[in-house]
Amino acid sequence: ETHASGRARAIGCINFCEGSLRCVLEDAATPPAVNYFMLHVGMGPDAHGLRAFGEARGVRTFAYGALGEPAPEQELVGSPTLQRIGTAHGRTAEEVALRWVLQSGCAVSVRPTAEFALGKSSCVDERQCGSPLAARAQVLDWELTRAEMATLDALREPDGNPTLFSSEGCPGPSPLRP
Image 1 (tube, rainbow, N blue to C red):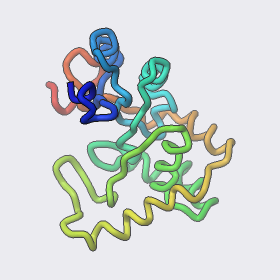
Image 2: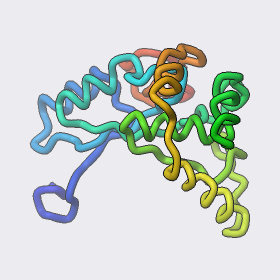
Image 3: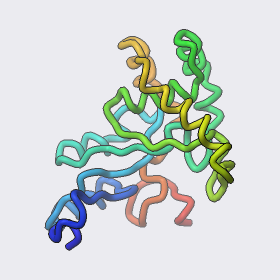
């Protein structure tokens, strides 16, 4: 209704697993333009087939959790592979993780700092966020090599549930479901 009235150019969905996305695509008058779900190094560039399923049907991937979710995963930010690649570019493992998502062709949301967890943010005022956000924007001014992308694409740890906060009927654990 909102889309049909012109008040929205596109609609999207959040944490829709393949089954949920399939239902929406079968029944919706306007299909979603994006599916917002977790994607990080270690899950593979296709996040258990979810990205390919959606994108084959015109639903682009908008990723969150490039550093892990609901808080940064030490296995990611402390990864020797990410650290080695980062050192080669004068970057941090966090920057490598963000760059991998972007260079994989996805939009990605970022948090202002790596000091976050579910319900917690270290940004109480603008001064705490401005500099870290500016640093995160610098992932746009360099690229990973093909060999580095292949190395990161091949990593299978830490894996994760791309639809972490999904509804019942979706595979994998969720902190929202028992």
